Length: 328
Image (spheres, rainbow, N blue to C red):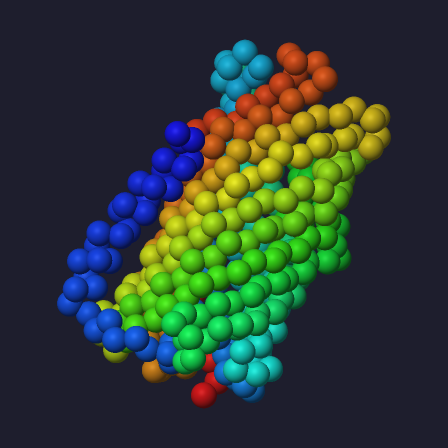
């Protein structure tokens, strides 16, 4: 069995028993209303909805050469502010936009030779514009069925960090996402399962240190996710979710000298938890969030095999706070 899928099943096994046990004491009467911070929430006609979130993450891993000998270990610290806004055109159609800002991220690499290096990155991401169509609503049908789509233009240039200049957090190319989600809500519990295709166009990243530009060919990642909310009281609720990304391989070429390479990033699985406090009923929710990401080993392959590298034992922890709000 694929290690990543095994971890996905383990994560599901950890989440499901507590939820099932708690659900026995909760009100599982079907509830077609829309609850702020629930995974199935969608604004109604004329309603504005938004989230503002701050997250701090730290990632560890190591790199090895073609023979499997460790060359270095790396430690990445990230700080991200995410802003999301949505508007209900009708009860079933919503448009939205989002933007990320990273005040400062840094990557520290410790080489087995004893050397170390620290590179910083900062800036804003390209904005993302999306829409959701609730094709089936639980008011009429047994479940909610949402069709999802988004587009991210290539407005912000991408370049790597150097010792003298911060890198950017932009992807260097345009992308889009299409997907569908099934949801179901009771008075005390909500669940949502989704499948998305993340379509990444050609992207280019400039390296100011050597003047090279790397172009990554288009590829598509697929994401399978499950999110839940358990409402413990009128004020407190707990969100739990997991997602698995089936990451596709990609062709990369150095546009400066024409040298090709092939990347195999490896899949990743994310476990997410949140404790929510309903500060103003269904209008303002404060959440404390935690996430953990497991990564498969990844490889970068060159025409000359001794140049091949591998990323191993990579994992991340992310903690943060999130504000969710909606107009009455």
